[in-house]
Every structure is written in structure tokens, then in C-alpha cells.
Image (tube, rainbow, N blue to C red; front, side, top):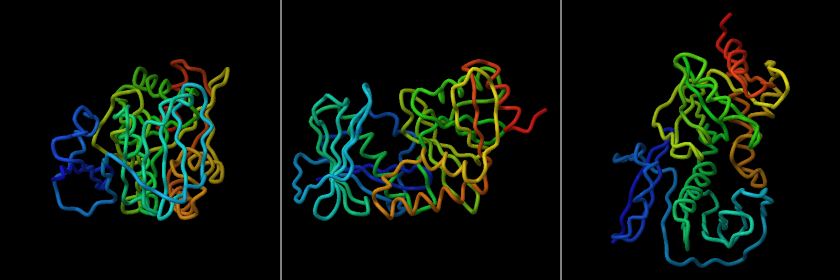
Length: 291
């Protein structure tokens, strides 16, 4: 008998199933706020399996992670794709995720690092399967203020989380929705940002959503200056921070359409800054419209 659990993130339902008596979701408390018990159709499903079989393996995307980063390689196989997961570049593969061509059906075999394998498998399947549903999984830190979400983008190590923490410290009423992978979804023409089970190293798993107030790219500098981006600059900024493999045409097309819509409705900025209190004050005055 199969044990199945369902979750709902940004309005999309997905499930995880496994042999009864082997509840692999036990201990993954980041999913608890997103448990779903309704009958809405599933966006995708993931089954935990003891073995995997596949044929026709060919390279599609071989990652080149920096030291300390995880390694995820993607291959085409007959009837879909295979993703291989490793905690660090020099570590052996610990998880194999076999997915259908549309990423709606996945099978995961892992040998160690359960939380790492399940989290990344679900996060990746979510990003791919939702790409045609006005949905973007974003690498960003998101702070809420005055009932709106403000997303801080940037390359790893540029200070996204630091900038969020500076807002929370210096801007009364600001608080953290998600610190690594929030989701933007367009609902009735309005881009909204959602909390998710995926928040990087910061345990922040909030099942809530807000209209997007602004998107801000953080860039380290010896001064604090914020400038509004053009539509093209905003598109490039948000597109580069959206999860999804551009080598797959339907994924790239879906990302293009959704990002194009978001940047026409939401102001985008470049924040060149120091990691100090003044940076948060300068940024907030501009994006909140305060004098």
C-alpha cells in the first residue's frame, strides 16, 4: 500500500508518495504549513522508489558549481529527463530523479541526504511544471512591508539576505516572508509573491501571499544609490533569477512570457549599496514612495 501526502504552494498542488510505513516526509517540517487535504488537481507528483531504470542517457546540462555549492546535472533519457544530485561538487551522487517530459511525474531514488534530495527534487519539479501557469520560482529574499512584498535579487553572496535583515532592523513593520525561493504568480492580472517550503538556510516557511511592490537587484558598492531600471533591464534582472532550464524550449518560452508580464506591472530597481543601515533606509524610501 502507498502512503501519499499532498501540499499546496502558490495555489499549485503536488504530492509525495512512498511505501506505507516509510514516511519519508517525517522530519521535513518545512512542508507542514503547506499540507493540503482537498481534491484540487495536482500540478505534479513525486514517488520515492528503491530503484530506477532508464535508457538513452545523454548530457543536457552539466553544472559547474563553485566550491561549497550543490551539484545538479541534467540528462535527457528516453521519455523524459534524469537529474543527478550531489551535496557538493566533489561528493558522490546521492539522488537520482527521473521525470516525465513535462515534469508532472517524477521518481526519486536516494542513498543518503534525504532532506537535500527531496527538497531539491520538489523544488525543481515545481519550477519546471509550473512554468506555463503564470508562475515563477525566484532566487531571492522577500520582505513584507505595508501589505506588499519586496523581492531582493542578486548573485549568491551579494547580500540579499543581509538587505532583508537590514529592512527588518530599520523599517518598522517589515518582516521576512522567504529568504531564498519565494514564488511569484500572476493572479487576476496582479503579480503576487508567495511563501514556500524552500527558504535556504533561514527557517522561514510561511504559507501566505501579497501583491509584489517592487523587485530590487542588490549589487555591492562603496556607496548607497538606488536607480529604477528600464523594462529591458528589469526583464534581464528578473529572468536571470528565475528557476528553469533555458535549454528546454517550452521552459524558456514560459519564463519569457511570465517575466515579461511581471516587469510591465511591477517596478524594478538596481540597489548599489553597502551592507549598512543607510542602505535599507535609502532603498525603502524609494520603493515605498516615502519622502
